[in-house]
Image 1: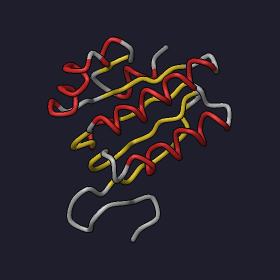
Image 2: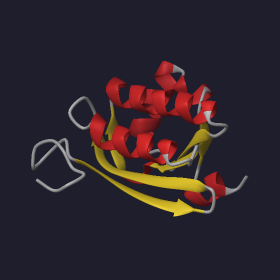
Image 3: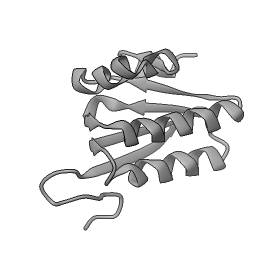
Length: 122
């Protein structure tokens, strides 16, 4: 199995690309964020925060699914980022993923943006 991916070969895979843009870390999860793949996102989020990057931008345009475990990973990262003076900005949510945030009320605690570019503007 590839480094940075988890789950079965056909479904449930998640890969996370990380890049630095100015003072922000931009993470792009691709695939499904769920119980089986949550650690694949949690680890780079925590590395970014531990490395002093508390402003996190997640490009969610390639995220196909997010369950409650995935949501909890993002909520945990939000708390840690805010403790470091930053925050978590979500960009490009697909409707199926945005619905999870809407149903749970989590959309109220994240900065939501249409694009990564708008999320990077302070």
